[in-house]
Amino acid sequence: MKGVVGRKAGTAPGYVYSSAMKGAGAAGLVWVETNLAEYLKNPKKKVPANKMGFPGLKNPDDIKNVIAYLKSVSG
Ligand code: HEM
Image 1 (cartoon, helix red, strand yellow):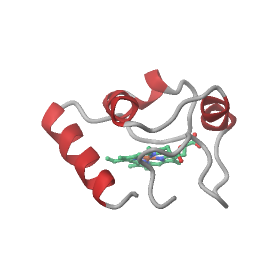
Image 2: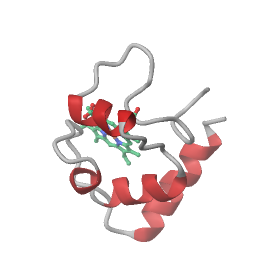
Image 3: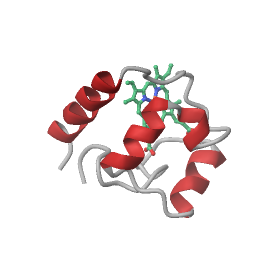
Image 4: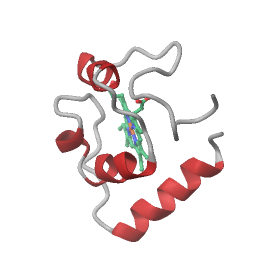
């Protein structure tokens, strides 16, 4: 599988994730659009203690556009 959309969290081959992100995948978090939207709005709320240094996107249109882009490069 290419890209992130539809992939289980914390499972891209070769990347060293935090145990938080690996645990989210192990607990069944899959990056479908609804989960991506929640994560991009507030990454630390959706996956507490993950190591992504980004506060999130507050503008719903930005979230929509970023997900549309991620879909265009996944598949
Ligand atoms: C709109 C911008 C961004 C999007 C759409 C995005 C998306 C994501 C997603 C979906 C994951 C989970 C990946 C997976 O499960 O394989 C992730 C993880 C991560 N991102 Fe971002 N991200 C963004 C911005 C950033 C920025 C600005 C940084 C660094 C300054 C960053 C650093 C990371 C890191 C280090 C992880 C791994 C987290 C962990 O293992 O706990 N991201 N990102």
